[in-house]
Image (cartoon, rainbow, N blue to C red):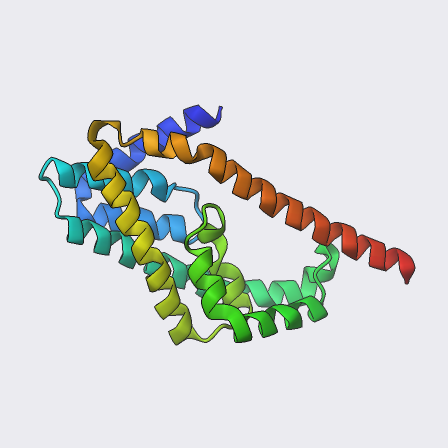
Length: 206
């Protein structure tokens, strides 16, 4: 099932980039960065393959991916501020998120927001959704943009370069990373489970 979905997404990615070029790379990375799972581990390697056969320029592909990433992240950040925070303040208690939790998140992003956003951009799964909590916590916008860009740039460089090296086998890059991606997803699920367990335990003691 997962393989079929990945193949379907890969076909869409190939068609969009073939048709629109650099704009297609930027658009797909924008979509990926605002929470829709179009894997950048497919987008940027395919761009790298096009660089290898002379249809794209390396710097152009990297910048298209990086700025697309930033644009999508800003959209997700804006959604976090405008929609996420009011919803959590009103309905968060029903999903075990309290105002106290929001205050903690605010302090974390105020003190360590740069590191959270930068390193979050370098991790599969997390990189797709890190902008929402940054927006909800009202992280400084200028810092958010700088560290999002700095985190997205090496990611775009790495996967474009891998696409150049792998050429016709560029699609294997995502397959080889799948186990690592699943490990990160498992860690995220475990952390959410621990969070829920701790909150339920606290409720039982009150």
